[in-house]
Image (cartoon, rainbow, N blue to C red; front, side, top):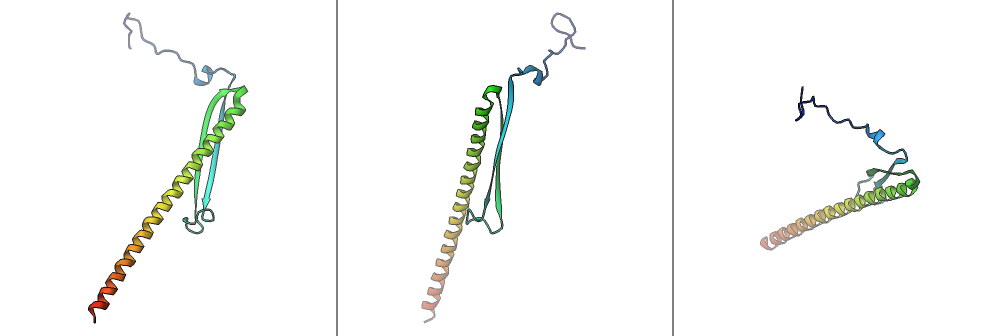
Length: 122
């Protein structure tokens, strides 16, 4: 048994259940947004492939504010998803540029090799 400074048996503080602690005029709003990016929308995605993006968020508010909060939470989710879509497309574009640069570099190297072999063969 644990005792407090006065020598009495110690008891943990009694806290109400989280749902009991909330006033009843509050509600929880949950909203989400999803987006499927397919090859028809982004030419860098392979045919018959897609990428899914999803965001879900919840908020507590007064019941009277639920509609406005619901819209704000939905807009937040939508902005987050569309931001992730833009970042993903930028990553794909950067990778495609790196790949193109590498291919062009290899082609130039092969052209130089062929030219050198033609000049050296005469």
